[in-house]
Length: 348
Image 1 (cartoon, rainbow, N blue to C red):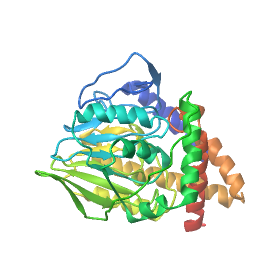
Image 2 (image 1 turned 180 degrees about the horizontal axis):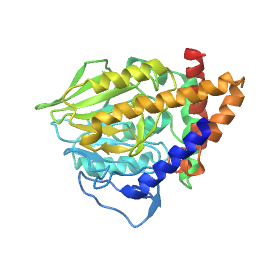
Image 3 (image 1 turned 120 degrees about the vertical axis):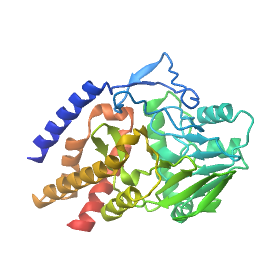
């Protein structure tokens, strides 16, 4: 049975975590961490993510600073060029703290660009706060992102999920902001954004998770910032897939990324830096995990279950309560519905 197999895989994964010491202790509200600082705070909490033995997932390549605050979303600042660039923004509920982290990391420099991987609340929630603090910053994203930002329904969903995250991760009752979202520069596959000197960002379209998902190849370091269309590493051998729009597009995106030459460093969304030796395996792991999830959903469909029945089984199979430390259950359920619909639309 699939369920028993999944439980066996979970047990195997747990043993792997123990062997590789990957149950790491994360900060409750991470400080502005400069590259390779390895600093920790006293306030800690277990998360679902884990390291490879001898590897630190927040040990980013030179010039990249993690300015993340709170839980659930990441924000990475590049300061290695003449111009600075922020990759994603993180959550709305901690947006002001992210602004403080950014200001400290910039150390008097301007923030020139925000690169948006896609338009989900956990990646762009803090955008309004950052845009207010740095009004001259230019946002770079896909053409479809610009369309999403003009949608009232999209903003309402961002507000609902951002509020759920606020209530889960903080004591604040301040309304989350959804104003000011914009795309100043529409970028597509192969476009290069000059950061001055020999630094630039090349856009790689990677649809599947969303229609607007893009990845970024930062040169000259060969650092690839992957989108969620090609998975989120949870721990060695464990990959989360969230294919909300198109299974075929996600698989094609992974195969496309695997063929890119010159990737020397890989950053997985939400996770951090992948060990260099694991880069080739990363894409393969995603594809295997994606096919397993597709087979599970189709198995429930073949049993005669309707959408609600499949969703119930999906939640029973994939949700664990400790997952709320990284994702509100409301967001998990929203994604689960889209995942099931995408698979059934394409294969049922």
